[in-house]
Image 1 (tube, rainbow, N blue to C red):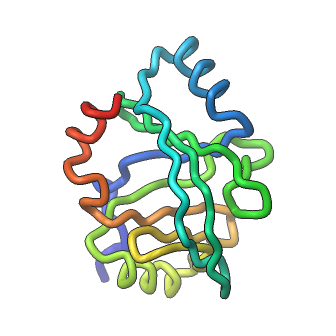
Image 2 (cartoon, one colour):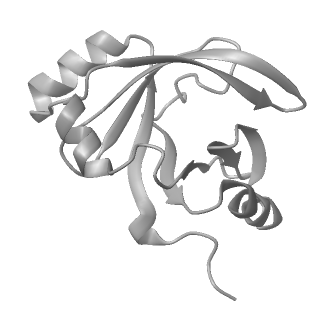
Length: 147
């Protein structure tokens, strides 16, 4: 049986932070990162069995391996993970719904999502974000034009 995800499709490690601007500044100072312009979007997200509008504020590192910094969102799964920096692993997929079903069957329970992204978590706390391939258009061009 083929794997649910392909290692080559891992495109970012997500980190949820209490203060996006401070995290951007600190990681630039210590790691030399350059960042996309912070983006703010309000998105209707299914969390469990309800849909709610969630305001996201985030930025991606221009350099690989890519980091995604997300401003914490109280009352949601987008809160810093106690004792660790990593919040999730982000994978590009061709079909979010189909891959989401396969992840669920593999023991990664659905947490939240839309038609273009989904979050799943397993009992060990490994969280995976599925992102519709092409959501950013050409990923490399996206980073070049927003960084």
